[in-house]
Image (tube, rainbow, N blue to C red; front, top):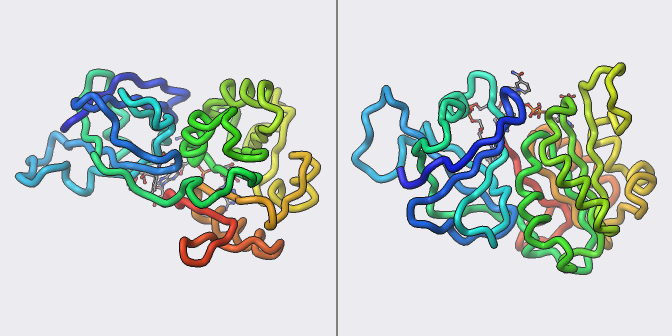
Length: 259
Ligand SMILES: Cc1cc2nc3c(=O)[nH]c(=O)nc-3n(C[C@H](O)[C@H](O)[C@H](O)COP(=O)(O)OP(=O)(O)OC[C@H]3O[C@@H](n4cnc5c(N)ncnc54)[C@H](O)[C@@H]3O)c2cc1C
Ligand SMILES: NC(=O)c1ccc[n+]([C@@H]2O[C@H](COP(=O)([O-])OP(=O)(O)OC[C@H]3O[C@@H](n4cnc5c(N)ncnc54)[C@H](OP(=O)(O)O)[C@@H]3O)[C@@H](O)[C@H]2O)c1
């Protein structure tokens, strides 16, 4: 183990924000949107002789903090029912030891997106994490022309970072925050959107909500989280002329599947 859990904020029983501080004093260099691995030793297992934790107790997590913050890294994490890693992670308290991979991974970044682009950032659940890193690093920096963030969650309590994102939308006229809740009781205080992201990221609905058209000539769409959402919405976007982005075959749809 080479890191310590600096702090944890439990938003509810199965959703938390962790801050991890590496012993070496500095988080590896990364691009907003990238991920690394966290690892834990299960007390019942014999530690291996090879460096790093047993592979079954290592999982990928997207950085939610901006790269400019070097002393600790933030992660937005959902505990999965009966999840092998997250059930152990949930027992870890501040001061507890864990492993933070020294390498970073992934192409789910703004590297191939020109600063004149419109950005549509779509997340389910903790798929919000990489966008926090992008927004925190680049806000106010003219890294995009305008940006809409669509975050789908089950209930109000699952809308992590809501205050920060609402404040950003109030300050920055180029940024729209569009949270949507799919299991909030009809009787609740929630007066916002209640549809799946597919109903929001379609041409007519999107223009009404974001105030600008959804156009593959000007926009890049990022999809993160639930793999079925990525398949479904990716197919729907193809009908509007959007293509998956690959380094060798540039397109406008970037995706990161969490499972
Ligand atoms: C590139 C990448 C980045 C990731 N970043 C994050 C992150 O920032 N935050 C985060 O919470 N998770 C993230 N994940 C998911 C994470 O790596 C683990 O899969 C997750 O924590 C579950 O691990 P587990 O051992 O508890 O569950 P396992 O015992 O491995 O069970 C896995 C099963 O749980 C379900 N599952 C996995 N992840 C999720 C999830 N987030 N929400 C709902 N169901 C899920 C799926 O059905 C999956 O088959 C990321 C995954 C990838 C590939
Ligand atoms: N024990 C608990 O109290 C508890 C509570 C919450 C979560 N969990 C655990 O956490 C895991 C993840 O839950 P989560 O809510 O973060 O993630 P999730 O199940 O992926 O749901 C997040 C959001 O994505 C939506 N969604 C799901 N599939 C979609 C699709 N194909 N297309 C478009 N939108 C889709 C959901 O809508 P829908 O509402 O329609 O699914 C919800 O709004 C669960 O599998 C469970 O293990 C446990």
